[in-house]
Length: 103
Image (cartoon, rainbow, N blue to C red; front, side, top):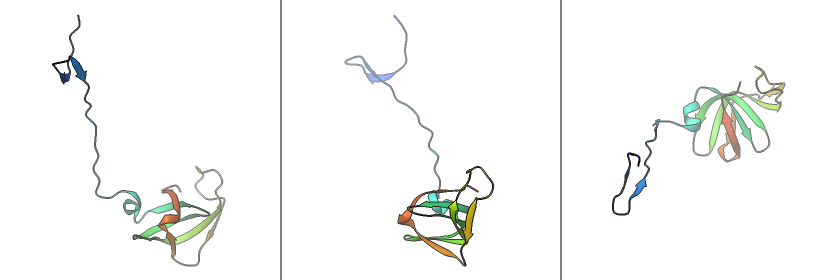
């Protein structure tokens, strides 16, 4: 006969395991948290990169924006072929498949 610790229904001798979970609460998450950072946006057709300077319900705004035509190894410091766009660039949020800080 062993000794255990548990919380459960004593009427049918079932033991219910409960787990405490670590919860990290942040004020901002996602694109909002990356404002001011150089981000990479993997979109439905193109890859965009630049400094994220604006986020609203529909668009994100990039400064010093480029379209990446060929990535090369993702751990390289520079893109193999990235073409600078002439000014700030807006990308529709619903076209973004994934995003983050990459280079």
